[in-house]
Image (cartoon, rainbow, N blue to C red; front, side, top):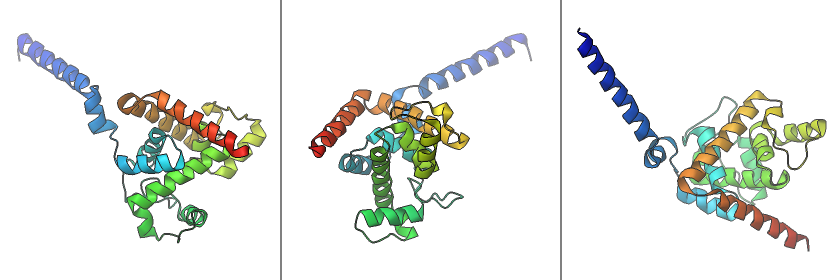
Length: 208
């Protein structure tokens, strides 16, 4: 093979890599291949109903199951939002509903509804702090309260690297990074700020 042929192959390969890089970073390509907003209607419906940032909700879904309805974790978490059956039963009780069977929990509507309701509950419990709420979604509420007590964490806690569990640290970082991409592709951070302000106002009037 001549030097000229090698140069041509190198040039073609370089061009192909560059073209792929550019195409991959085009917003529409990212939307279609990397950050699709699947189940958007249901996510937006239940996010609005339970006062949750829709981009946070879809990011949890992407990180938890990558939009796989039939997903089951080693620990037994089920469906799109990876809900434990016992947690689903507790959620059903709180919503005054019949507890779902495993098959029903795989249903996208039920799973998204319960997952977003639970995320809303955790946001409420942990001072509307996304880091703490996500840590609780992954590691459990009891663990997070224990870390708060032992570490003296405040309501505005944001030091993800000080979360004791490696898996939870990685999880929280993934969800927050994913949310930034969804904001970039589908909306603006101002929408979350508006939501937070509305939720705070609701709580203020609720106390009066």
